[in-house]
Length: 362
Image (tube, rainbow, N blue to C red):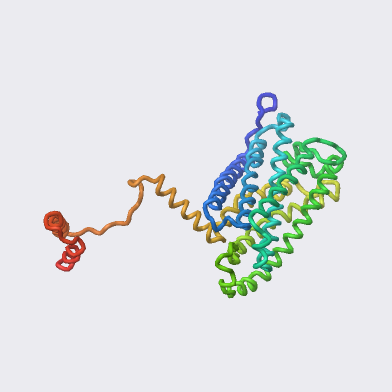
C-alpha cells in the first residue's frame, strides 16, 4: 500500500499486536473504573475523604481511555494525513489526565500519612467538603496549565503536535526550543510531587503497622455518642500502599527519562523506551487500579461481589443457571409425602409434624 491510495498504514504484525493490546486495555480501563465509581457511589462507608480521593483517581484513570483509543487509531493512520487540530486535542487529553492522576496520587499518600499520625485531628481537619474543594481547585488549575500548549504561544511555552519517534500526539521532549520552558516547569513540579509521594509512602510503609496497632486498642467510648465524627478508620491504608506503589513504578521511570531528556536538550534513548515508560505503563496502571481496589480493600471486594450477584440474578435466566444435583428417592417416599399433603387440606394437620413423622417412619 502507498500513501497515494489510502490513509492507512500497511498492516504489520506490530500494528496488529499493539491494536489488540490497546483494545484490551481500553476495555479494562472503562469497565473497571466505572465499576469502581459505582461501588463508591453505592457504599456509604467509602464516601469519606479517602473514598473521594479514590473516586477522583478512578475518574482520572477513566479519562486515560480517550487518548488510549486515539493512540490506537493513530497507529493506523499515515503521518501525512493526521489532522493537526485533532492531534492537539488528543495530546491535551493525554497530558491532562496524567497531571490529575499524579496530583491525586500525591494527595492520597499525604492524606493517609496524616490520618495515621493524627487520627483524632484528621476527621476535624480533613472532611469530604475539604477534599472535594481541593480536588476541584486542582482540576481547574491543571486545566489552565495544560491548555497553554494549545495556544502555541512560542518562547518555549509548549506546543502539542505529532511526535514522529513515538507515533503519538504529545509535547516533543526532544524539541527544547519549542517546549523547553513548559516541560522544565511541568516536570520540576512533577519531580517535587514524586519526592513528596516517596517520602509519605516510606513513612506509611515504616510506621503504619505500629500506629494501627495502637489505634485499635483505643476504646470507642472516647467518641461521644452524639458526635458526628467517625472512629478512626484505616481500611484504605493497605489500598493506598499498593495503589501508590504501583503508580510509583510507572511514574518514576517516566519522570527520570523525560527530566534527563529536557536537561540534555536531546533524545537520550530509543523511541521504544519513550513509548514504554512514558505512555504504555500509565495505561497499564489505569487498567490495574480497579483490580487493586478489589484485591486490597474489603469494602470494594464486597461491592464487586454484590454487583456480580446482581448481574447473575438479572441477566442469567433460570434455565441457564446451574443448581446442585438433588439425590433421587424411592417412589414410595414421594407417594407417602403426596398422601400426607392431601391430608393437610382435608384435616388441617400441622405440616411440620406430618413431615417429621414421615421421616421417622421411613
